[in-house]
Amino acid sequence: MVSAILAQATPPSLMFLGDSLTAGYQLPIQHAFPAILQERIGTQNIQIINAGVSGDTSYTLLNRLPFTLHPTPNVVFLCIGANDGLRGHPISTIQTTIDAIIQQLKKKEITVVLAGISLPKNYTNDYIDAFDAIFPTLAKKHSIPLMPFLLNDVAGVPSLNLSDRIHPNASGHQIIAKNVETFLRSAHIISSKNTFIEDNKSDIIRAHDSTD
Image (tube, rainbow, N blue to C red; front, side, top):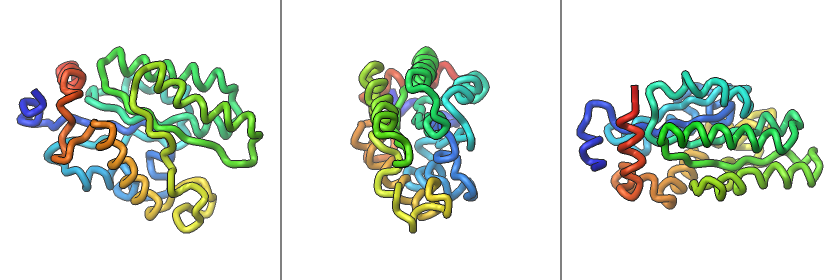
């Protein structure tokens, strides 16, 4: 049971995997949305791990997975691919690599939540549309929850982003944290009591038991 897990010394963990949008580019780590979410849900219930690395592509994330997943988290919130898209990588390559990441996570019996991202409007409409379609396609293939757009209510708002107009500032991360929390509750990952939902308990228990 989930209650049995929570009674252990280490609470079940939620790891955020991604790039600078997750890491909190040019911000103290406590101002990045994973740390804000930790404050909102309480450290006694769920341990939040920010495993975002600025500059990561789907390929570099795939290659660092083996050592990043130690100890093995119970749930992974995955948002990756923005740097692939900004560099104009082939859509098929991006999708194949993110697919491989999800497969590796599921092999370790980790509950996976996927978040979508998009690109600036200076790319062609065809490329943006194909890029945007990667995330719902993979969510459907793997039957995993999809947060459609990580930067909802933040992207394109000058007051919520750094001067580069790409990376959220501290105020932007506050909004992302609120939106992520709302999504995790609506997707039945986190309960109103700030614990993992028992509907997912078998996945969570197996992941917990496989930690090193």
